[in-house]
Structure formats: structure tokens, C-alpha cells
Image (cartoon, rainbow, N blue to C red; front, side, top):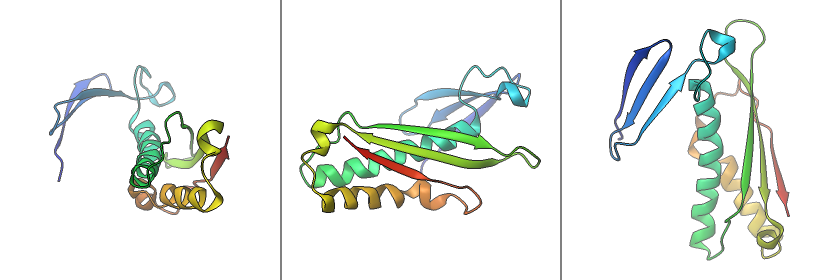
Length: 139
């Protein structure tokens, strides 16, 4: 269990504190939903959580097998619904592994890493109503 403490600061802005580390970040409503867009929105954090969870789980697997995914990049493109109710409709994920890393991995290792990404805790927590296409670029 992890405690997250959140305070509403007004102006559609919140401050969140991570209990175990005391790390702090802010959220802000996006400009298309009455906010200033000065920080991540709550739905941006869902997209961020998905991308970081995917690479973290891949990194755990890679480390356990003595290879390194340093330099791997992820781009998550969040799409909101056009009509109410407002919600995340699609999270497009593109993972790009550098050529020098990819060249050291065989097809089975790549497949295992892709499976790890598809089964990370955040991905498994998303409802089927959210479309999550994932593409991998190996070098």
C-alpha cells in the first residue's frame, strides 16, 4: 500500500505528495477543460503511468537477464473523447529501442520484452473502453 496525499490549491490545480518519498508534483486542468494547462492533467498522468510502467517492467525483465535497455524511448499520445462524457478514448504507445541495444537481442528476447510491456500493471488496469495500440521499433 502506498499513500498519496493530495491538496486542492484552487484554480483547478492540485499538489500531490508521495507518502514514501515525500516527492511532490502538481496537476492542472488542461486549457480545453477550463484550466491553465501549466502542468500534467490527471488524464496526462494516466498516459504517463502507462508509458513509465511499460518500460519499468521491461527494464526489470531485462535486468534479470543481464541486458540493458538504456536509451529506450516511449511516446504516448493521449486522445480524449470528442463528445461527453469526457474520458480517455485512446492511448497510442510507440516504444523505440536504440539500434545498439536492439542488435544484442534475439527475436525471443524481444518477444518477451513486448509481452512484459503488454502485461504491465497499468496496462492491465485500463478498461477495454480505452484503445491502446502499441508499436515497437527495434533499432
